[in-house]
Length: 443
Image 1 (cartoon, rainbow, N blue to C red):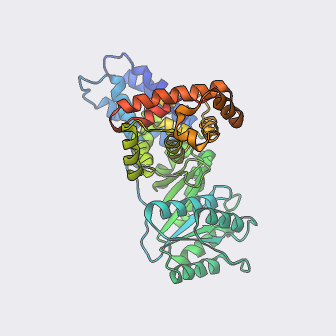
Image 2 (cartoon, helix red, strand yellow):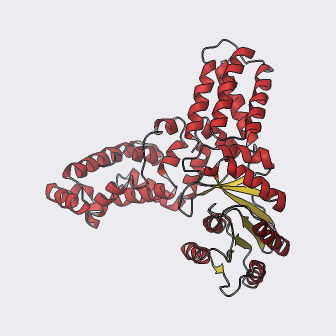
Image 3 (cartoon, one colour):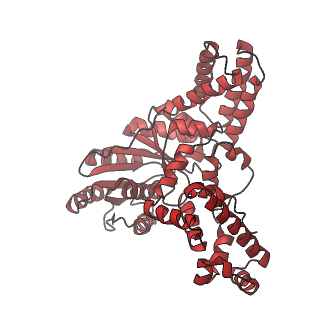
C-alpha cells in the first residue's frame, strides 16, 4: 500500500537532513521532489500543486522549535497536509432510517458486488445490524449468483427477482421485504457498465429517487488512478453521493485516487478494501493513512484489529496456564488462528513503524504459518498437550505426516521450549505476540 509513494517522499524529505534551518531555497528543492513523487503516484495535477504550495507557505511561516530539525518539521508539515488532503478525520456511514438504505454505485469491475457483501458482514459483525442484500444488477449474468454466494458465506439473506428486468421494481420489492422481515439495513447492489453512459446514469438515478437512500456509496478501483477520480466526479455530478469506497488498496496501487478524490469531489473516503477476504474492509482514517504513507506505521489500527479477536475469558485461562508453565501446542495453535483472523500478514506488519520499509521486497504469504500448523496438526492430541513426550521416533512420524523434515520439527520444538520459558518469566504473558513473532517458519 503506497510503497512507491512512501519511498519517494522519504527520499524527498531527506534533502533537508543536516540543514541548520528552513530556507526558501531548501524548502523549494524539497517540495519540488515531493511534487514529483505525488505526480508519479498519479495524484491530480492541481491537487499536487495546491498541496506543495500550502506546505511551502506553512514551512516558511514557521518559527522552528529549537528541539526540532528542519527535516523533522517538514515531515510534520507534509504529514498534516496529507491528512488534510484526505479529509483529516474519518466520516461514519449514515444508518438512519427504518431500514437504512445504502445504495452502491460504480463502474463494472470496480468491485461493487463484493464490496456489498463485505459491508454487510462489517455491519452485521461489528455494528450488530441485521442487513438484507438486494440484487439489482439485471444485466451481468453472474451478478445475482455472485451476491447469493456472498450472502451464504456471511449468513446474510439476499433478495432477488429472476423474472424481473426492472431494477427499480426489484429495489422497491426488496425494501418492502426488508420492512416485513425486520431488517434494519438494506444494501442495494446496482449494475455497472464498462464506461459511463446515459442509460446507466438514468437507471441508478431512478433507483435513488425511488428509494431515497440514507447513504450513497461510490465504489471505485483504486488501481485506476486518475480515471477513478474522473469517474467519481461524473457520478457525483449526477448522484451527489455521500462517500467513497476504495477497493484493491492492497494491490500495486500508486495511491493517486486516495489522495485526489477528496479534493476533487469534496466527498469523504469512508471505507477501503484491503484484500480479497470478506473481512478485508477497513474504516478509512486520514490521519492513520498519512502515518502509513510516511512510514510511521499505524499502531492504533493494529491494536483495534487485535482487540476484535481478543477473548477476555480465554486470555485469563491462558494467563493462568502460562503462570503454571502449562502452555502447550493447543494454546499455541489457538494464538496462531487469532493472528490469522486479524488480516493480511504483510499489511499487519506494515502497521508497525519502520517494518513496512524493511519488508518492501519481501513477500509474506498469508500461509506463512502453514508449515508450523502442519507440524502441530501431525501430533497426536496427547503430544500437543504434553510436548515433552515427543522423542526421536515421534519426531520422525510427525515430520513424515506434515511433509517437513526432522530438522524442521526439532527447530519448532526447540523454539517452542525457549518461548515457553520466556513467557513464564514475563508478567502474565503480555508480550506473547512478540514472542510468537520470533518463531521462525520452517522452509
